[in-house]
Length: 81
Image (cartoon, rainbow, N blue to C red; front, side, top):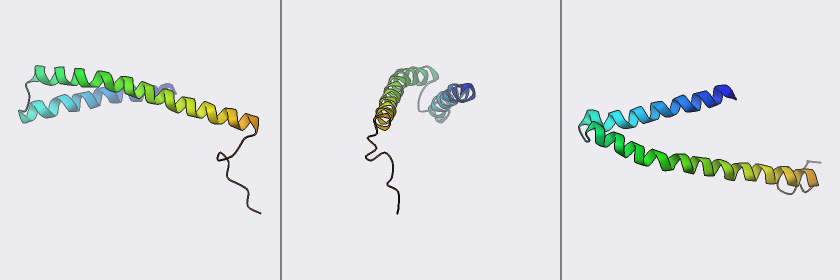
Protein backbone atom coordinates (compact mmCIF):
# COMPACT_ATOMS: atom_id res chain seq x y z
CA UNK A 1 0.00 0.00 0.00
CA UNK A 2 2.82 2.38 0.82
CA UNK A 3 4.41 1.75 -2.58
CA UNK A 4 1.14 2.54 -4.35
CA UNK A 5 0.65 5.74 -2.37
CA UNK A 6 4.23 6.81 -3.09
CA UNK A 7 3.79 6.14 -6.81
CA UNK A 8 0.52 8.10 -6.97
CA UNK A 9 2.10 11.01 -5.10
CA UNK A 10 5.19 11.09 -7.32
CA UNK A 11 3.12 10.59 -10.49
CA UNK A 12 1.21 13.77 -9.68
CA UNK A 13 4.47 15.70 -9.89
CA UNK A 14 5.08 14.34 -13.39
CA UNK A 15 1.59 15.29 -14.54
CA UNK A 16 1.98 18.86 -13.30
CA UNK A 17 5.40 19.20 -14.90
CA UNK A 18 4.02 18.09 -18.26
CA UNK A 19 1.09 20.48 -17.99
CA UNK A 20 3.40 23.43 -17.27
CA UNK A 21 6.13 22.66 -19.79
CA UNK A 22 3.89 22.12 -22.81
CA UNK A 23 2.32 25.61 -23.01
CA UNK A 24 5.61 27.29 -22.04
CA UNK A 25 7.71 25.48 -24.67
CA UNK A 26 5.14 26.14 -27.42
CA UNK A 27 5.03 29.80 -26.45
CA UNK A 28 1.32 29.77 -25.69
CA UNK A 29 1.82 30.98 -22.09
CA UNK A 30 4.46 32.65 -20.01
CA UNK A 31 5.85 30.48 -17.19
CA UNK A 32 4.13 32.45 -14.40
CA UNK A 33 0.74 32.32 -16.15
CA UNK A 34 1.12 28.59 -16.78
CA UNK A 35 1.91 27.94 -13.12
CA UNK A 36 -1.03 30.07 -12.01
CA UNK A 37 -3.47 28.24 -14.28
CA UNK A 38 -2.17 24.84 -13.20
CA UNK A 39 -2.50 25.81 -9.52
CA UNK A 40 -6.06 27.04 -10.06
CA UNK A 41 -7.26 23.96 -11.93
CA UNK A 42 -5.33 21.26 -10.03
CA UNK A 43 -6.76 22.20 -6.64
CA UNK A 44 -10.43 21.36 -7.45
CA UNK A 45 -9.32 18.14 -9.17
CA UNK A 46 -7.98 16.83 -5.88
CA UNK A 47 -11.31 17.54 -4.20
CA UNK A 48 -13.19 15.70 -6.94
CA UNK A 49 -10.83 12.73 -6.67
CA UNK A 50 -11.39 12.63 -2.91
CA UNK A 51 -15.17 12.72 -3.29
CA UNK A 52 -15.19 10.01 -5.96
CA UNK A 53 -13.14 7.81 -3.63
CA UNK A 54 -15.68 8.38 -0.87
CA UNK A 55 -18.53 7.35 -3.19
CA UNK A 56 -16.69 4.19 -4.25
CA UNK A 57 -15.95 3.35 -0.63
CA UNK A 58 -19.62 3.77 0.30
CA UNK A 59 -20.61 1.41 -2.52
CA UNK A 60 -18.17 -1.24 -1.33
CA UNK A 61 -19.43 -0.98 2.25
CA UNK A 62 -23.04 -1.26 1.01
CA UNK A 63 -22.20 -4.42 -0.93
CA UNK A 64 -20.42 -5.88 2.11
CA UNK A 65 -23.45 -5.23 4.34
CA UNK A 66 -25.77 -6.92 1.82
CA UNK A 67 -23.42 -9.88 1.64
CA UNK A 68 -23.33 -10.29 5.42
CA UNK A 69 -27.14 -10.15 5.63
CA UNK A 70 -27.44 -12.86 2.98
CA UNK A 71 -29.06 -10.58 0.39
CA UNK A 72 -26.93 -11.55 -2.57
CA UNK A 73 -29.26 -10.43 -5.36
CA UNK A 74 -27.07 -8.95 -8.05
CA UNK A 75 -23.86 -9.44 -6.08
CA UNK A 76 -23.11 -13.08 -6.76
CA UNK A 77 -23.85 -14.86 -10.06
CA UNK A 78 -26.25 -17.77 -9.76
CA UNK A 79 -24.74 -21.24 -9.81
CA UNK A 80 -25.25 -23.31 -12.93
CA UNK A 81 -26.92 -26.66 -12.49
